[in-house]
Length: 380
Image (cartoon, rainbow, N blue to C red; front, side):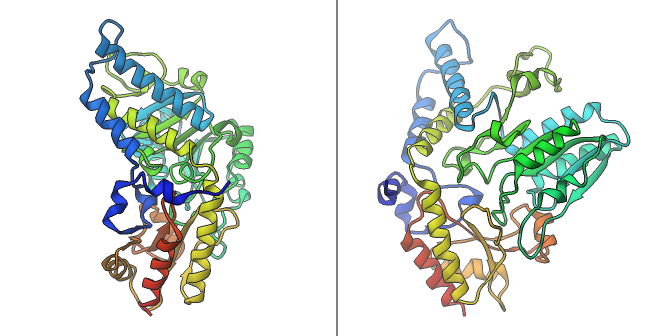
């Protein structure tokens, strides 16, 4: 089946402004069906969740539909909603670390977004636990399994790892790392924010204890999602208000849920499900982009054998911010920076300035890629 990108693009009103959007890794453009779902929920009669009035039942249905839809989308058990992936990770780091003792260990990687590093580092500091760092290969952009597994011990409590680097696109072998971590009775906390927009997700196959993602990266509204087995969530006791529910997953959700954003998330998942052939299509465009950049003599840092359609590059003689500015002036949105993958950027030798990141999404077409390549050529 041929991927019909023109039909997909017709659902994105924002594209009418004319920009070529390669900024999806920081937040995707939103299709009309998602905006419609948000608007319809906001303008309908809706109340706090309950079962007495029609407006209460509508709120309950919005929440339960979003939970069920996300669980099916991720092939996961229970779904917890939060303001963002960062907020959820801080909450769960605080909850899990309640049982840590001095000498316990957590493993983080230099490839991860800081949202899957700093909450664990800070929780470890508070518990006087030890942080162990897994490094990736600067040349290949690979995070070998053994770079993580060699750090494991019977004192390891959590392994925090990305399913796909938001800076390089690298996709580590999470399932193999998780298998080794579970042999040490450690939890595996997987950042799937950059993975979920591009790859069919199967949390059970990844063997992740916790999997987090952000709907606004896969065409939805700003929100955070955590997936975990309900049996595991039952064992955890987060800080919460006394009158708030102690049921799972509600015990982990602080305050009233944003019903309109949950409705938008459901719509985003349904739209993503309709995109047959997306992964193959995006990788084809990535190959075209990388070939073109190499022909222009551009330095490419994204080199791992398994990775998302995300390309990190720099132009010799030009600061990344200057490349970003000049591309933007031509209507090509390819931002520059470390994108909160600060440890990754520093490990690559790019410091805090980072490089230029071009992310391909469901609405990217060949003309977008051609525009980016032509704009880069004019920088030389």
